[in-house]
Amino acid sequence: MSATSSLGGTTPEKPNSWTLRLRQAIDRHLPMDHLLPDRQPYYVGSWVYVFGVVTIAALVWVVVSGVVLSFMGPQWWHDSHLGKFFNSLHFWSVQLFFIFMVLHLWGQYFMAGWRQGRAATWLIGVVTFGISILTAFTGYLSQQNFDAQFIAINAKDAMNSAGVGAFFNVLNFGQMYGLHVMLLPIGVTILVAVHIVLVRVRGVVKPIDSEGGSRS
Amino acid sequence: MKSMGATQEEYYRGVRMAPYDLLKELVFALAGVGVLAVLISLVLSSPDVAPVTIATWAQQDPVDLVTTATGELAGSTTSAGYGPPYNSASEGQSWGPIAPQKWFGARIPIDSANSFVMQPLQRASFSNTDLGAALSAWQGASADQQSKWLDAYTKALADATVTDGKVVVATGEYGPLPLMMSNLLGVAQAGGLDGLLVINGRFYQTDYTQPLVFMGDGEYLAGLADEAHLTGSLWGMMNETGSYPGQTWLWLYTMWYQVFPFNSDTGFIGLNADNADLGIIILMTLLTAALALVPFIPILRDIPRWIPIHRLIWRQYYAPRKVAART
Amino acid sequence: MDTPASYVHWGFILISVPNLIVIGAMVVLFAIALIAPFPHAGEGDDVGNK
Image (cartoon, rainbow over all chains, first blue to last red; front, side, top):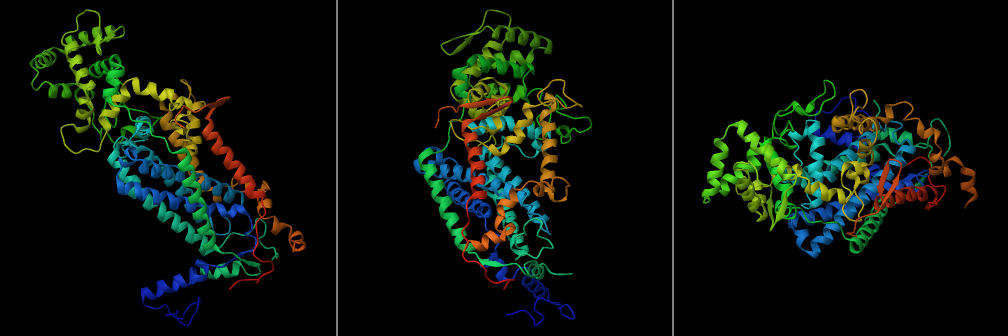
């Protein structure tokens, strides 16, 4: 089950098996003790580092409450006290999600977290932010209440002005709801997963101006 | 080429490591955020203001509904003159050669006069011979005659009154319009127009384009939104009904609507209040791209070095003697 | 919570009190995270890794 004898190095010839080459690439880039390390560099010692994981936690609650809401259908929460509670849970988890995500963004900006080969991690983070905003937007449009009506009627002008409105019709509940409960959450989840994998592959960035230093 | 895993080994060479339980951290985060979300939900609940229906509109402000319907026939409403994607009555917003609104044509066709007035009335005239006769009279009249009736009726509506839920105007030459409009109002007040505009001859439907565009043409919905501070000039995009927080993350997007040149009629380099939607979308696209590309943009990527927030975050690293003394 | 919110008007800025509370709380949370001491499990552990 273990990799070939050339542990993490290069074999004299590349093996022909694609499966073997994939396994070797994974073993090199993300061995298990990098995916689930029980140690971090000692400079990971500030509460600012916690904003990322609480953002993930909030996202989990967004999805859990969203699953319940979608299982019971889009009208349930208007007519049922329990439904209203799950809608509240969804509403406030989303607020917490954005609060923690932006705090995470502020922290990573001031730490210049993109350094030393981590530009892709940063870029995916910003894209995730954008897709999350789109997901929240389609969610507000799916509420089937006064707020949804007014947001739809006004947002359509912005969408139409950019030509996007011809394909993305904010007045079309069916389209907005489908995007909100399936396509966009899948997008957010994939992006977050890639973002986390990149952090685990690269490790946590060193403090600013530590490059070349010999502090331990 | 070095693999990234090997690079991490090299990256951490010489760096002191400390135990750190990621899984425990995740579980605590899940529990903590969960408890917080549940508590806030139990105490504060969430906003749910009931949607406006055309029936409510017709009952609360019949003059506005009839005025709007008359405007649809006259082609003077927002939707009638909108342009793509609903029709080709205008070109839509543009900034110089940048005019994406018209690039894709009328992909969501709405014929305001027919969709909102004539077709619902035709359906309502199924067993209503008076209405049928009025509709024939309307359709048989010349465009010139129709305009005369519309002008006269629109002027009269400005001073209309309401008696027993019906719209009353001064006597004048309006042709079949008053009968058509009073029937449309009756259908609307009974809830029939909500149904007719959504269903549009089908059975299943999830597309509310027609009733929403029709309501958007009137003043009633906008008036309610104004009271709830949801309108654009009031930073509405960020706001929520009641005392709930809104979409605070849209602060920058909505801010531009309040500042020059997007709040000005004359504007600057062709950007003004008329094409503000397009101008702001272009601006926000550029700013978002800049945010995504910060690692490659000089000055933006150097600011963190100049602002000593990182010295607080990594103070143990920058002052190791203090750490050692702390045992 | 269903009564209309109050608004703060400062120059061209018009923000609802609930939104202001959210943003204020974020700034406070960030400041606390910067300053609050972070518990370290143990000092002077292995150098390098694995």
